[in-house]
Amino acid sequence: MRQDMKVPRSTIASEVDNLHHQERETRAACNFIKSSAALVFDVSLKDINAKTRQQAHIAFARQVAMYVAHVRFGLKFHDVAKAFGRDRTTVGYACRLVEDRRDNPSVDFLVDCMERGADEWLELAGYDRNHVQSGWYQ
Image (cartoon, rainbow, N blue to C red; front, side):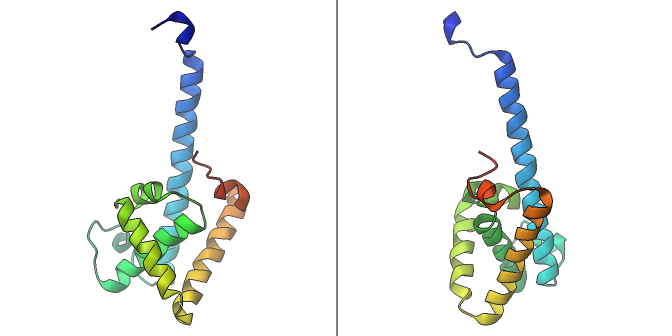
């Protein structure tokens, strides 16, 4: 490698630190949403974090959590999938399913409650919606 093409070590270290900070923020946001889904849908956090699908009402609680993480926090499918231990196509499926089920007023109310909770968390954590929509993890 030519000498003039080397990146200063301090720049690389700074970028690595920034990446770790962004991953921590994404993980914290998803942990909040998982806990919220457990409370709203009256399931355990252990069930939300389970590697297997579980029962339908547990799977739906997880799907709503993934939907809110994507829609309210502006996280990419890949980032939501990583935080939930799932594949990005599973997150896409969850988002489509939840969006379709929001036609039911009861489901829409529960999802709306979680979205409002996410907005409050963002405010308390010191983020504004424009900052998050552009992706704090980028």
